[in-house]
Length: 140
Length: 114
Ligand SMILES: Nc1ncnc2c1ncn2[C@@H]1O[C@H](COP(=O)(O)OP(=O)(O)O)[C@@H](O)[C@H]1O
Ligand SMILES: [Mg+2]
Image (cartoon, rainbow over the protein chains, first blue to last red):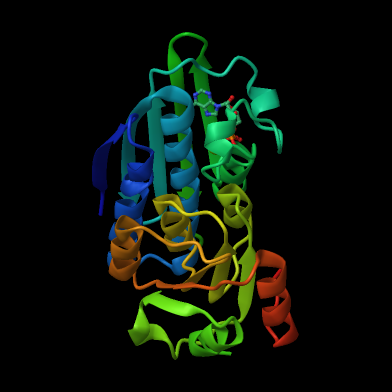
């Protein structure tokens, strides 16, 4: 098994943010992955998808599904993250109040992604964009 | 307790998911911040929230939560109802406020998980 999926994540419609993660979740479930693996991929990708929509004007998601791991790459052409170490801290957020009133912007997204994935790489450049690569391992 | 018990205890009105009322629930979580909800996975749980947008349903879906209770009589929109029905998530609304709703469920045996 080597399944590759690609999704566009539109940046102009907050209600649709999370659609791609929902589709990936159902695909993994259908393929018979353990509920824990399905959930970890879904939550980590969902937080990343939300970030692309609220901070970067949308982007793209590429998912690779192998029997022993799932890798999700989220790429955007947003403003980039000037200080990744700071962005990774729980509670750090530059989200405006209107995002907070929608239930996000508590500064827990990146920490949650780190918590649920086995490896997380953040490749970002101010003014150019951000690529997040997260891998979730299937532990036998 | 079952989702039906949750409805009775909270004097809640069912919005969608009547076919899942006999599902057992063990844990609950009350929050208006979805990332807080996403931070801790619990089994078979109920989400209580005063927030009304589709991301509430998506959050519950990612977490495999089985029931969402909207407090203070908040009314979920048609898009939310459709999404919840598709994912098999029960939606209900209670006139009670968050603190009271959580307190009543706790008193009746639901826990916060860990
Ligand atoms: N894709 C992104 N593009 C630009 N900035 C981002 C991106 N993702 C995260 N950030 C920055 O990192 C901060 C922390 O992100 P996160 O932990 O998800 O918290 P939140 O989204 O609640 O603000 C954000 O407030 C934002 O400044
Ligand atoms: Mg975030």
